[in-house]
Length: 370
Image (cartoon, rainbow, N blue to C red; front, side, top):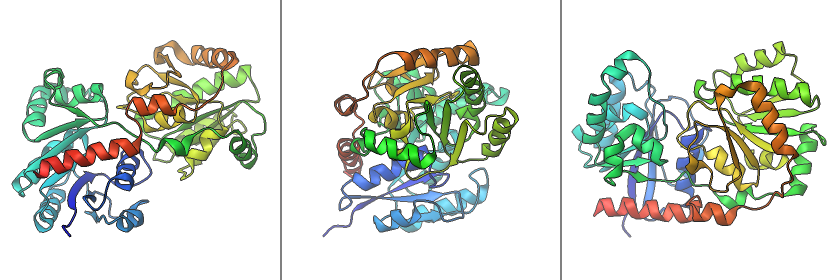
């Protein structure tokens, strides 16, 4: 029996955050007799998914050095050559350029640059070099992937996207895992001590782009109008403690729960009355797709793409409108009659069913093999 095709994915680390969750979802559902994922990551520590990846036939190479250092590329090149990887798939933003250049030098004939965000640096140096970055970002990869049209245009340019040279790979999920179950929702509320309070939820690590500070401002205004309301946030990250201090300073510790990283977010969605994202930038939020699969109404910033709204349950607000406007809109939305129900058909039609999408990605990899 032939050995499966091994794809080397390059990322920061396999923790519980958007891109690693996406990759492990695809690895779980792809035909692993044909295609298997290996991972080269910056972190030198054992990550959340390492044991599962190994159980699924994959390998994790922890380089133990940041991708801003030359040693990272020396180690990465050694892994590519020793493993005989012909396909290298990078998920590191503009660092895809040196990573895939390293892959080219090391013998990888198929090099995939994958855009997961719509963020562009405002630093004057990057603005000055934008043309060069765009040129190299299109020359070095042999294939260009993106989680959405906007993310593809952001990294590869409108001309390249309009010529059909960028493939959108949906941030697909296991839809049935998130279907609304009112009995489970009541049980989770009891576990968290929420009772019958109004509960707004959010899932996402505490990073600058997620803009949790504004979310707390919004909720401060909402509590002034609905004193018993609760905000539940699942996620970790380096800014979590600063947000915790802000919650305490505002006297909202009884209203806001910071749960840290959770492996049971599918259960948490069941306990929410609505879902909120205040991000500055998102390529396409996996958490937002999960929330819609569970039938939640979603209130999000206008920095998210329309591709993020396959169910039609998303309300878009402008961050510049301020916290008071957001709070008043949330109350208005939740006072509007709404039947919470399955959105399976809409999500599947829009390409967010991991079972179907994994087969499509598998076919793309096998076609590269020739």
